[in-house]
Length: 129
Image 1: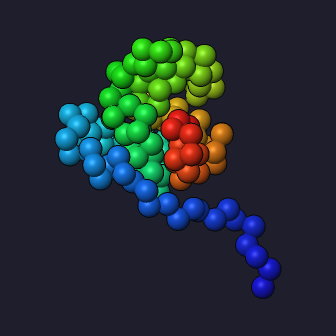
Image 2: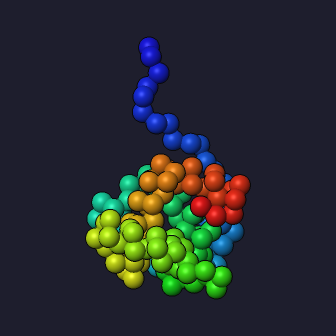
C-alpha cells in the first residue's frame, strides 16, 4: 500500500510545565474552563487540548493577563500587539476575551507550526514558539 498522505501527529510527551506547575498555578483551573468553552465552540480541536495547555503554561503560566515587561507580548499566547491585531482581524475575535485568546493562539499554531506538538518541539529548542 502507498503511504498515507495524511500528516502524522508527532508523539510528544514533554509536558513538563503541566506536570510541575499546573496544580500550583492559580490560573490553571480557569484556563481549563476557557479551553473547554473554546473546544465546545469548535475553535480548537479536542485532540489539541493537552499540547495547547502545555504551550499556554510555558508561555503565560495559564494567565490570560500575563504581560512580558520586555515587549508588547501579553495574554495566554503572549501575542505581540501586531500579532494580536492580525489575528483579531483574521478571526473577527477580541483578544481581551480569554476564550478568544486560546482560539487565536490555536490558529497561530496551525498557521505557523501545523500542530501544537510541533510548536512545543520548537519551544524545546528555542524557549519560545
